[in-house]
Image 1 (cartoon, rainbow, N blue to C red):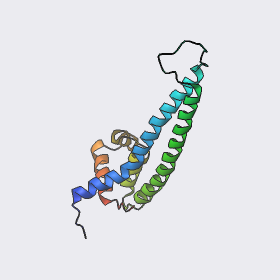
Image 2 (cartoon, rainbow, N blue to C red):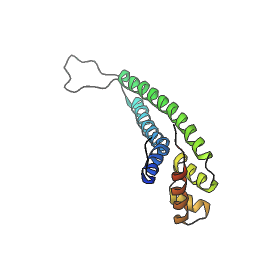
Image 3 (cartoon, rainbow, N blue to C red):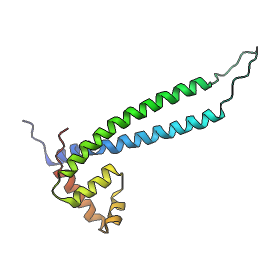
Image 4 (cartoon, rainbow, N blue to C red):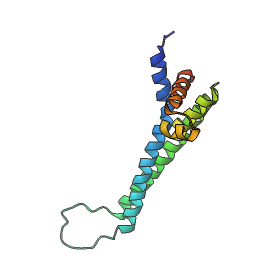
Amino acid sequence: MRIVSKDEHFRESKKALMRYRVLMEKVARMEERLAQIDRDLMSVKSPALSSEPKTSVRITLEDKLIRKDELESKINSTLKFARQNRADIMRCIDALENQKSALVLERYFIDSATLETIADEMHYSYEYVKQLYVAGVKSAVVNW
């Protein structure tokens, strides 16, 4: 049986709990790229036919549509994985005894709120919210 120090447990728990937040940031970046492709599709014109050779590679409508389909597929697969990860994290958070810590962890890891924002919303000091966060991560049982 492997002995895990408290600091190592904290780091491993935080890393596992952070997965959903990281995945959703990745999805947001991909959605921004998808929006850019949509804007590009609006501006793509059909290539002019000419007997003169072109020196630059022209991106066609078909190329953009292929990129869009690939990106949509990637977004959907990432979202599917993120939903499962979110469910795992919520089970872990819901199992915490301290409900204030559970709320802080949910707002931080699921809703992507900063500790400062959480402190303002809960009308607690930043230091108290930070204590709740640390206590919650330390007591979280991450076993997925």
